[in-house]
Image (cartoon, rainbow, N blue to C red; front, side, top):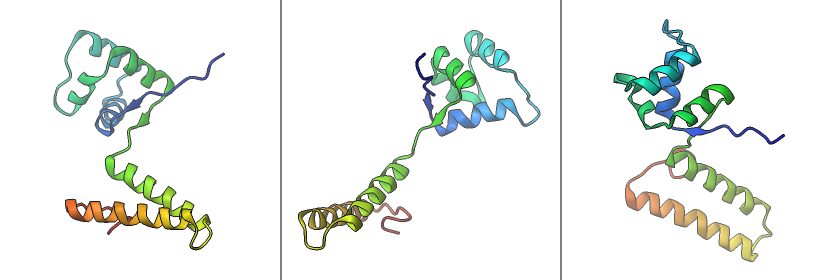
Length: 121
């Protein structure tokens, strides 16, 4: 049997699903899917309009993963590079490479006026 894959959805879509399932709404998965197929979502639920029905069904049944923000992706990349740097031999190719990567990431973010905690803030 193949492993079930959880769909990746946006933070806004995840929040809409959570709000439907709680907060006094108490929609069932059947209620959510029926509404999704027959109607448009409004207000805080609008992000669900961008989900295919099959993806929404998979998210409701199998669970879902929330898509990482660009900042989270940069932070993870920077942390992985830092870990590689810490494991490299001093003055080795890896040492110089990872130092250059870290400096390049920080300089790029600074040039764009972007601050990311744990990277350049």
